[in-house]
Length: 239
Image (cartoon, rainbow, N blue to C red):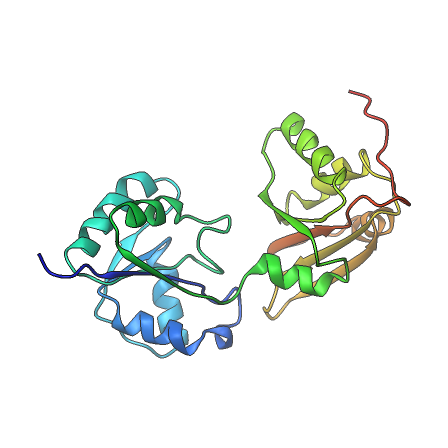
């Protein structure tokens, strides 16, 4: 049996193709297999970077992750190099990849990472809120009761917290947060980071909610919220 291939986990631009690293470019060209969420978006990335590759594309997302991970590991064991990317940002961070990493490690396959863009870290650094200790929550639960419970847990923590949200659901999330924390709790909203229509909204929660009243937001959103301090407090839990 020959040497196994290498699994490469690579971050891709979250909006601006200019953020693609030289190592990502090399990996896209040299990989035998590229696992991605959407082959159309992968092809768009290759076009934006003026790259061509002979790699075989494999669709790898949340729905088929358990089925595809063992197959990709078989390719690795056979000596193929596999590159894992997502539509944007860093794999595994609210994106698929965990099953593949776990399977690869169990098979004693070499794994390497090509660090790069992350919407969560980009928003945190822009927020103006304490970055030394933070919690990344990803997407909140879809059911209202579970969402409010999770928000209360997060809002009761002294660390800054970060959540991903769709622009359509953002108003609901802000209103649910307003039922839990005082209106002076500081929040930061990053919309369409690094893209043409990037927008940054920051201020006390009540003020931010008022400023968004009547607006229809589009695009992807990262919400960063100030942690609980001695000057802040939670509203009484009425449920």
